[in-house]
Image 1 (cartoon, each protein chain N blue to C red):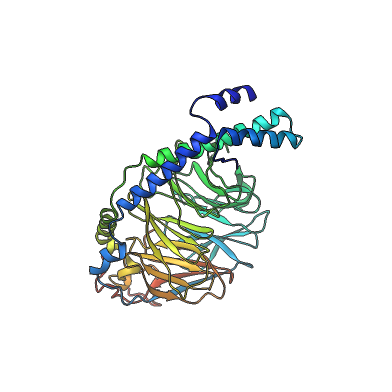
Image 2 (image 1 turned 60 degrees about the vertical axis):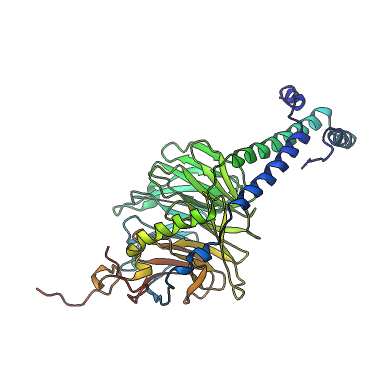
Length: 98
Length: 368
């Protein structure tokens, strides 16, 4: 990818290099445009992410803990079944009471 | 096209130089902001919580029928059936209660890497090395392959798929490094998601009903959060040192867990906008293929290349227990929709359904 520190000068250098490599002017220009578009996308993405509102890790963690605490009793893999009947994978007894 | 572009090249403030400079400044600012809010470690806050000291999760069913590696599985919304797909080119619908096979469909390809139940439970989607996502309406009357329908095609293998919110749409991830949203009826591409720089391996929907957000994980080691309506990436997380194989939203919707070839699982919080936990041990040196949370989010199950499932306390960041049994890599795992069971699939050709067999995990009872 073309990400030069000296910007315009670098772009020209690349242009010359590519042109010497036998690429047509249009092809070289297309490549430079696509590099620019790529960099534009990267920067725009970072602008969006920089605009995100953040909360502190302590607050985020407290909210996660609160959610877990409120749902722990429904979590059968964590607390087990209230009775054998609540277990859908229990072995069915072989005889039934009529 | 060239003339349009030329104008843009020379418009002020739009040189690569300026954009690169701005990007570097933004990156530094982002890092600074995140660190400013990094006031405490998750495990420190969780210190006061009770230790989960005894968790006896055992296999109760073994599903045998695939003739090669099991690659993917998904629970039906009815909490009873499971769809699985395999390297043998087959997709099987299982009754997990009885272990019976209700349907077995042969795909026109081997390595069926992804399969998913639709929310209605009447439709499944699958695909893999054929680059396609194909849906099969399930009916007991006739052979399900007679009504199959190809919905979408990628330019490389399809690695993962899921139905967001309804039977009408499918979201897919692919080795072509994109995700895509398809209309089931017309097969039309509704939205394309560009942003990863390598194969997309996993995706998961945010748990809210209005769910317009999903997460993807990739071999570029990035976790991306997407807005399904705009097709835009809204957040990105780095941290993993190798391919990400699995991503899963925390049931609260505020965080995502990941599993990677770097042998760690991680937790990224969306609102703090950063990694908040790493689940790893020195003795664990094998890659993670699949992760899922218990319904409260307290337990994080992770399937590894060393044939084991590690169960992590997601808050205290310690391993609670290890599940043995599979005789090859654990390739996929998933908690059932009601949270009663954990299905695991393996390269040993089998799936297992595991449940808890001791009732005193936290010395409390489940009342649901």
